Amino acid sequence: MIVKPQLAKLGLFDAKVPRYTSYPTAPHFSNDVGPDRFGDWISDIKPGSAVSLYIHVPFCRRLCWFCACRTQGTQTDNPVIAYVDVLKAELDLLAQRLPSGVTLSRLHWGGGTPTLLNPDLMRDLASYILGIVPMGPDAEFSVEIDPNEVDEARLDALTEAGMNRASIGVQDFDDEIQKTIGRIQSYDTTREAIEMIRARGISSLNADILYGLPHQTKTRMTESVQKLLSLNPDRVALYGYAHVPWMAKRQQLIPSEALPTPEQRLDLFDTARRLFLWDNYAEIGIDHFATQDDGLTHALKAGRLKRNFQGYTDDQAEVLIGVGASSISRFPQGYAQNAPATSAHTKAIRNGQFSTSRGHLFKGQDVLRARLIEALMCDFRIDSAEILRDYDVSVSELQRMYRTTNVAFDGLLKITDEGLFIPVEARPLTRMIARSFDAYDLNEAGHSSAI
Image 1 (cartoon, one colour):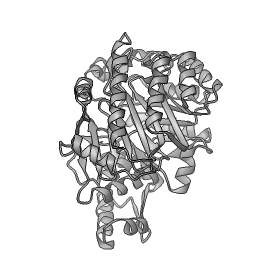
Image 2: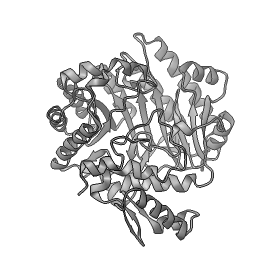
Image 3: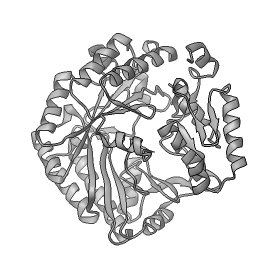
């Protein structure tokens, strides 16, 4: 059993490492990828294949202080209406490049607050999307829903449009913590939103909860998790709060002295983890939990679990297209990111071109290392047979990587002819172990603590 002093010796409480929702991570993107290359990658999609589509809505009625996402506040619908027009124009550009027969595997609306859109805008945008790329068999249409910014009419519009999965951010139910992070959302408000969602036949519900927030204690964490469990979510993402006030200026409103220590963060995570496991949720990767009959659990058992910018997924599509300001797309050839600022994105689209401003073209061992890192993050193991079959690497080179990593972690890892394995007791170190397969220099900007 690994104890805190040993974890401390290995650097867990001091390390700043990526969440590895991509490899290379976004700080390593460059201007090597622009609108022309992005357009070529769209044209190269296999005809008749399934792709995923992410729609970014960067607007909120209020800006939560803890959030580090690219968002902007608005009290009127005018900028939102104008933005939807830009999204439709961007979709038109995609339609000009998309090969025939392409369908959707996943459609996700994120933000920001997608439920800021009024019902007519929701119907209009959904209809426009599906008129260009229809839903494929067993496709999922998920929407991030703010319980403070949703009502019967908007849920009716989303359901009619085909939404079959909802995602709700909880963060924490404690009153003092909510006030400190600028996110007031009562348990009753959350429960009522979920009841409205369930009443419309939406059986799949995701929920996000944070650990590492100011004033959090194990007792408060227990109370919030128990309240969340009473709402019966199908999936839960247990994310660590990343305090990066040098990047997200609004986080300067959060008192740093009220944040738990790294050791306390580990205790908070373990408290929540135990509660989910006691309630018979399956543990998915490093920070997700799912019911036994959920798609993530089935994917984990079948060895099909993947990781993308939303976290863990059972989506098998090779291509993820991001639409909207700051959205990131993933292709077999690399990554492409739209202009982060809404104004710059809008200007490019209105000029008839994609707003792609940066990205990464896979080279060298990028694809190999991306798979090694994903395998560790998803399955806590690397299957040597799979890697040797699918990637250009020798047995000796792969074993050298294993040995180098094992030495760095004091022999904690298990290496056999079958591959490399992270024992259960060493799993708090997973992101750090994955970091040892990362060939890029670590840029601390935007990276969260290892726990």
